[in-house]
Image (cartoon, rainbow, N blue to C red; front, top):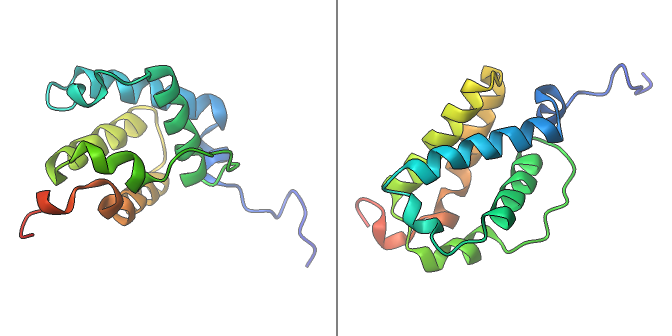
Length: 132
């Protein structure tokens, strides 16, 4: 069988509408996070234009879009913040709520949740995890 445009699987990124949809999700997500009193403090001295760009690039990769991310790794970027698992969970919940509100299909939501689980150890500070 020859692979053609008609037989090439469509990425989650393409299914949700590509760059414009990711940008809309990032904007709505940060509205929620910055309005959350438990999370807003993490962003007090952060360049939010750059932060939004980084998240859009990372979310694009997670969804199977083009990989144009050239920033720091998750662990390097988050370790100095001493993020506890409870805050990581809240950020993940805001992301899933945002994507749900934007009509992202259930299988794509499940994929994003799986990735959040896979990268948690790179973001959460070890000493802040229950039982550690």
